Image (cartoon, rainbow, N blue to C red; front, side, top):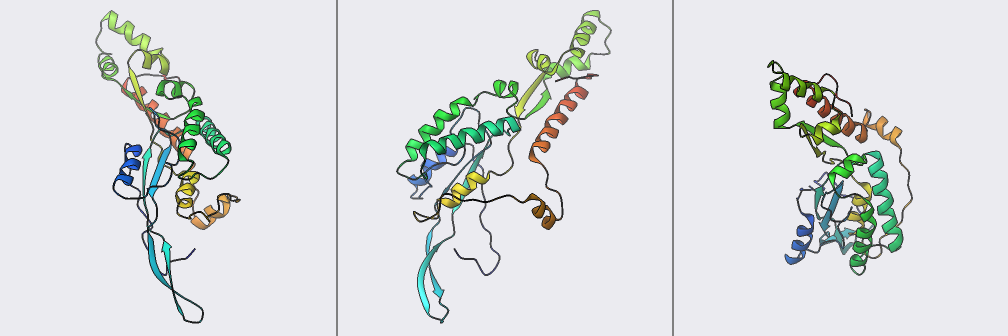
Length: 266
């Protein structure tokens, strides 16, 4: 492992809407992709983050020994990474994701490579069949965070609250008493998943691992040290779950204001 003398751009990670197409296209354009896409398997409703890359280019370099002798060699530093983002998961959803991912890795029991990639993908898909793959169920089971917004029907209903017609007033009173689920079921509010905009250390490790070759280590031990990190950073780190939760709650409050609801319960 070597370090560069001066600062340099490590890599940029563009986003795609279909990472499986990208994985296939890289090979078709003579770019060696890593063996598997990191993260969850393909789903109708994407979750968290899926990442892949082409393997780092092997480039010639001249190393200088302690005695000043020039030694020809090579290094692998430059690679391209791409990602597909899905729904941000709650703590419950993330725990289920971590459990299923670890279960798949434990069943394979060896590092993923080109020879066992198909086997691992099959195991991963089987394990993740336990994770609901539709947004209504994910929302009902509180596995993911969502953004809520009023429908056209809801906004029209809110705009007629001052019209003195008995039938309309009765409908407005009924809306005031509805829960969030009831407002959704009756077409006054819609929702969409919040996009996960964070980082997955395990997936990133898989990207770098693919560039280490057969001699690279696959099992590591380590520990986190949030206190020291925040001390050196000079500011407290935002908790991602709290951030997504606040965004979700803010969207609910905005719906209540737009629909002129005095109280909106979840």
